[in-house]
Image (cartoon, rainbow, N blue to C red; front, side):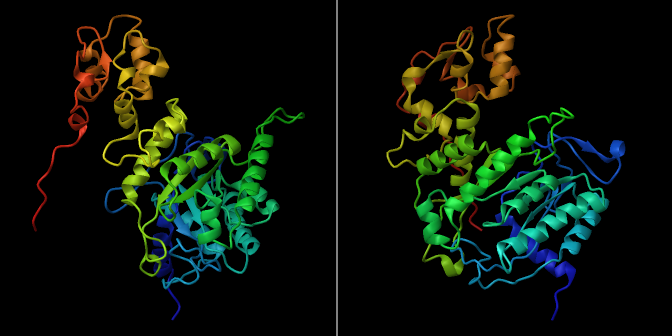
Length: 410
């Protein structure tokens, strides 16, 4: 019995939850009110629709199909998996995107797909969807396409003309992991595609000789997704792989996707650590590397096995392991040192640097900046405050642990 459009939407939107979404960060501003067409997007991101449970969402996030000729051990939609299958035609995805937009449910599209027939056939259909939305319907909302492994370079390039962001998944932290659990995918080809896309993005950012204007090509750049927990790679290995991807391909983001065993793969791929908390700590460590001046070795050095601590965040873990670096005087320390204080974020540090030009700052000033004084006071000195021996307390770590809670019995 043929599945209805509603049934297929339920299957393929649920199947897409395993793909990490970047929302619409980093793209160019477009507005149909000024230039005609349908939809709009803001360079700072969109977040206008809400799921029934109250989560803020912005994109129609679906798979074109969850049929797949590949048999990647960590994927719920692999060819040997016993899941309900469904498929949209390109015209149906276009129609759904436009209808969801007109009902103010979404402002963009996040589209991925299983691989049907072959990589090029699947990629051609995805490119057609983006192309029709842009050219036939004047859709100016955000489009993120997950590219298909092994697809031809000319198809990836054409996709970049119509999508705001393209993703080429690195799959797993190590080449050995990919070869073991996704033998039909080839790490060298994945990196080659990422490199070719980077080159095209760089070329598009160079003004042409005739117009001095830049070509519109993947304005929000490229990203990648990495499954974590499916193999035995340590957090140090994962983060070093990410650092190499950021520097080598100028990625906007590496997305970490926590692996949770599915019934018929649980024996082959055992669950190593609590997946969601590990994912959360990796994102925090990734942030420290990208925006706080930490190198990967610093972040992971406190644990001999190269794993991040789960009960405290990586910045606090580093600070506790490097107590000799503290306390930091918030009235004289440079930006780089202030960024290493647990509880101080980038915006707060900039505010401190600006405010201390006019007065000496105390704890009350930090409180006015919405800083958790309880978290920072062991690591700083300020006007009217010195931690004395607080930084040397044997139970300092326990001060940051959340108090125990009585769990419900029923």
